[in-house]
Image 1 (cartoon, helix red, strand yellow):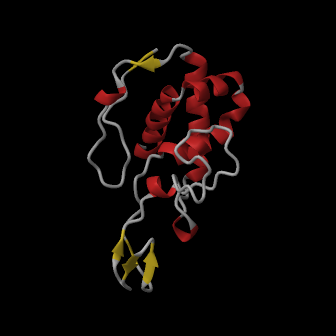
Image 2 (cartoon, one colour; image 1 turned 90 degrees about the vertical axis):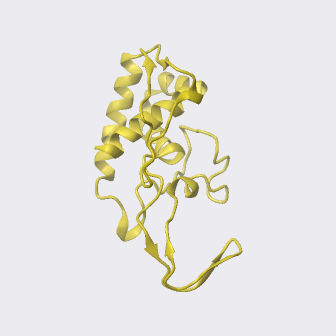
Length: 161
């Protein structure tokens, strides 16, 4: 359940930090599907995948990675790649296409992705409907993240409903 909790908390923080996007979603609930995809891309629940090993030697951005080297792909970085996403550091709930890697790729693609998307749509639609005056209860600078290598998780997200 950690990834779902992190999707909801990270996504809520992203929306509260981008009030124009929050207002856009409130005005247009039909954005739910693309909005959840964008929240997964913009500030997803996982920082990294599991360790992998380079099958062949390769050079990436001027760095040589030898065959057999241990690599740890960072999903958050990949999902902010300017070569793939225009204005990658901007939250855009209407972004299309949105080929993020929040659920991995290929043989390692998350089997729970359809459920996570559904949970995200249900949770955010309920939150937007039931908490029209939602706001952070503390300054953003006071928020802390858990020190867990794979998860991108806030320790807590105090809000005022």
